Image (cartoon, rainbow, N blue to C red; front, side, top):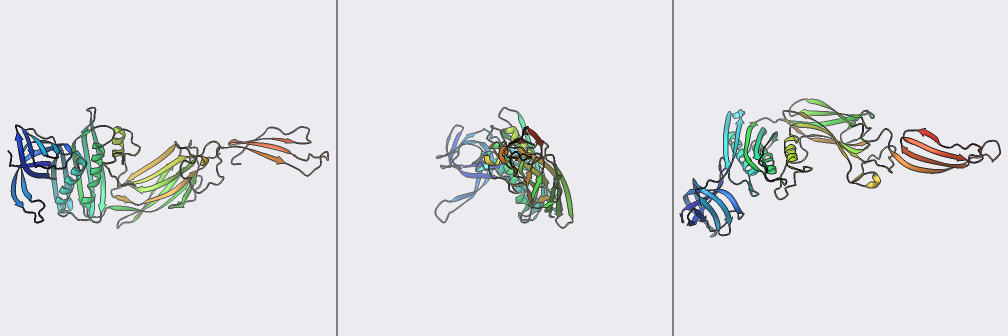
Length: 458
C-alpha cells in the first residue's frame, strides 16, 4: 500500500543485497515506489519484498536521511527501474539463480554449506559472477574467522546453464591459490570472471541456471613451488643454454628442458621435458616458455566482451577455453614456432640471433604465417610460480634458398698457350638444397655445360 516500506532485492542468503524505500502508488497488482531510480537501468528483474523499518537516521549534512530496515517477506517481482522510481507486480515471484558452496578450514575444524539466491544476473554493476564471488568470500571468511589471513586454498566449481537453442551446458574448473595477505580474497576473483565470461559472451544468449562451488578448502601453510633455473638443448645443438638464452634447432629436433624447482621450505627438484619440433616445419623463429600456470591474469571486462576470448570463435570454443586453460598448479613447457622462411628469401648462414619483428615480407614473414605450438603440462599439489623464456631459431637441414648468381671467370694463360685461359661466364641457380650452374669457357673445344652439384648451404 502507498506509504508502506518497499524493498528491492538483488540477492538473498549469505550474500544479501537490497535497498529499501517507500511505496508511492498502487493500481491493482502494479506497485510504484521510491520516487527515484535504484540503478537507473530500465528493465530489471528483482524480488519485491516487504520491509520493517527499525529507525530513520538523520543526515546532519542535510542531504538525505536514511533508513535502517530488516527485510520482510517477498511480495512480488520488480520489472522496471526508471526516473520516477521502481515498478513491481504483486503476487509474481522473481526468478533467481541458486549459488551454493561447501567450504572447509580443517585447521580450525570449521565447515559450512552456503546458499545465495541471485535475482540480478546480467547487470554489469551487479553481475552474477561478482555475486558468486561475494557469496564464496562470505563463506570463506566465516570458516576462517577473519578476512585477512595468509595461506593457501583449493577451489572447485561448476556452472550449469542453457544455451540459446535450449540445450544445456556445463562448465567446470578448479584451481589453487596462495596469498601472503588474504587467502580468502585471493580465492574468489577467478570464479567471478569465469561466470561472467559465460553470461556476457559475444556469441550467443545464454542463461546460467546454477553456480556450485563444490569444494573450497583453506590451509594455513604456504603451498608454493618456485622455478629457480632452466637449461635447454636441442638434438642438433646439445650444449645447454641457460635462462633467457638463444636456442638453435632443426626440424625434427627434440628440445630437452631441465627445470629446477624449489618448494617453499623444501628441497630442490628437477623436472625434465622433451618437446618435439615437427619434422615438416619449414624453419623460422619462436620461443620456449617455461612457466607456472597462466601468464596473464584471468579477467573479464563487461564493457569489452572480447577482452578475454582471444582466438575463440564461438561458444563451444569458449567452453573449451575456459575449462582447458592452465591452472595455477601447472608447470608448463611450451614451444611457439612461426614459419618465417619463404621463396625468394635467403636464410642467414649462421642465423641472425634476433627474431624479426612483425610481418615484414623481406624477412620472409607474411600476415597469415603458420604458428606451431608444442606444449606439455605437469601438475603439482602446490601453486607453481615463476617463468623463464628462451628465443629459438629453427634452420632447415637444407634451407630453401632461391636465386641466381652471375659471375665472370678469368685465368692467367694466353689463348692457344696449351691450357685454356679460363675466361668465361658462369650462371648459378639456387633451388632448395641444389646448387646448379652452367659454365662456358672461351678457347675450349668442348665447353662445360650443365654441371649439377648437390650441396647443403652454399
